Length: 342
Image (cartoon, rainbow, N blue to C red; front, side, top):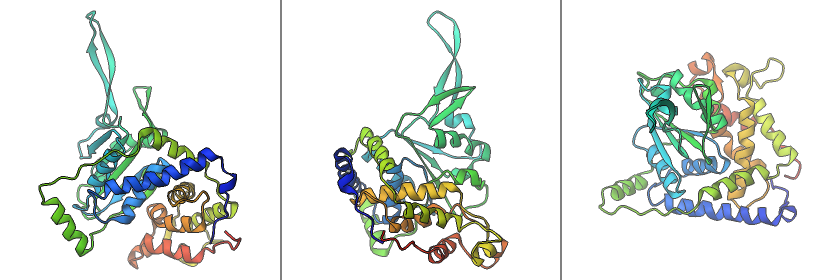
């Protein structure tokens, strides 16, 4: 599973920028680790989201530093940060902003747009499932188009722009499950779990001390935009791209060609966005590890966070206690990796 070396054929400017991405990741991690202890996979997936320019959903019980992680990353990148606490009475205009009547100097009145909290670089939608679908949908255009439409007027959001949403998996009363269409727009479903004992001891020790770590902004907005552009230019070999597509297609039940466990336990498989994010995430992962091409291992490493929220299980899976995590693991075993020297 080795990737074909193509560094020699890449423009020198891109090679230099690739080194800066790797260095930038290490600098960001160094600063983030002043505040965030443990949660290695979650931190890595948040950083890949940033380098791709996507949006991600963080799921975990209270007290696991979901909000703190995103706020810390925004500070380290010197990005404008906005936290929206989702509640049952939150209205779409509370997110996007609205037109208000303003009096001008000449005494006349006119409608002027008052921007909402969505107008930031990093938007944290805290407990997104606590608000009704109509308000949840206010994020869709921003996430997909990086713009907001209010009263037939469209307002562009300044780049870079990211939405990170949090969700508590144990409190279901008074919550509204996210529609599949909205879930599909999140690049990763990032799971955050309780820390190991030693890490938890360190958290308690650090957070009960009077000294607060000082954070330094180590990567600029312009750098992040340049990194996102470079990710798009990373080459992907045909076998790697086909493997990503085949992995996603294998998650869909099909009477004529699906694996038996898919036909038995899956109602709907992953959409084409899953393959797109497998490739984009693989590109970003390769760059942050100092490589200029994507390997099969990159795709396999990201299959779980990319696919687990895009596979909808049926009654049989629920009655037998089968999870989407198990199904993704079974897909990785069932879909063969091409033997092409990659």
